[in-house]
Length: 545
Image (cartoon, rainbow, N blue to C red; front, side, top):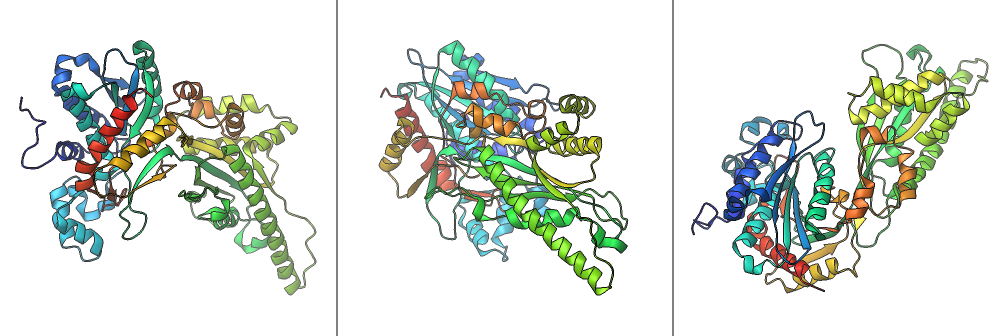
């Protein structure tokens, strides 16, 4: 029976669905996230199998979400087997301000293609536009093409039940681009589905994008596992002074500058894992807390870094960073004293005897310090949260520490290292597991000219981080001790993650320019080569060992 999902004019079903999804402006944190879920649900309910079984498609509201955002699910069951494969992907995108004058056309691939055909500032994007093989537009790569691959493969199995020997779950999540609250909420739905249908989740296949690693790179990277991420934050309090007496103070921005130079893009702090793309910390925010102009030096500065995790526990990384920052602050303190002494000597002023202190704490160490000063930190933190529940999740930790510091009022310059949301746990798949060996077998037998390279950790951060957790309870407890208001701001269901324990792989669409205005997906691979590879892997994962 011919229907709207049949191919015509050599346009693949994946491309048709991608264009439908890209046309929906689903920027993270806007009402567009609701609209794109409606579009996906509409597409699903047009599948003949779901017209017959509408109960196999449903949405899940995020608890306490002010926008009323939802996840969308579809279930294609198979009787007499519990083996289940999950197709999962996210539906939100980043914003479109970076398109500049082209912002009105950010979702219009034809307009963008024509523009880039005449764009002489970037020969690579011009060549791609002229080829006709690339689909442009916000979300085309990250990751609406991946959504479309999953939907088209779900449709394929619904139309070829003789090839479906196991259960298939489609999961489309909201809120991936910042706090990952969509997939976190979805864990309870996956648990419910598992319990009610006695499912055995074999693998979760993510189709998030892959990109070339260097100019001319044609390799296609397939990932078995997910890198993690911790937001390493620094509350920095200096000693304020008038600029006319500048050596008498300790500028918090100077301390922040030293920390930034120490950590930002510094490979000395990365894990060593042979053959893997291990990335350093990157500064995402550095801001003094002066709210208007005056001639007082900045007393407080806040900063945070994206710090990737792979195999090491977060607590180990925090202690390593803390010790390095302490050494750097000792150097800074010595330097400041020397400069002040030189200044006084040149003026024939007497030596300054009072020594400035600059202490470095982890949050857990700071709490213990406050207790030695007689403060009831548990009650203070509870009281603070009751009055400040509407703070941004990143801002809350800084403001809590600042409020605690006013309670002790010790006047000491300090640096406090802590963790803020989001926290993405890392997880991996063993090379000896059937998840890995079957994937390798499918890639080895793929009938195309592609060169596939297997890598352990998907580097771009994804919802796959929440399907499984590698760190032990003790390791996570040490991290949580340095995560202010963790249970209030970012409660993660670690027990459920351990119980589900779903291994995740990323077999992604291929393109360039994710999170930029030149975002584009390569159609021949993403829409024609990739979908059958995923189908073959799905069928292998359904088979008995």
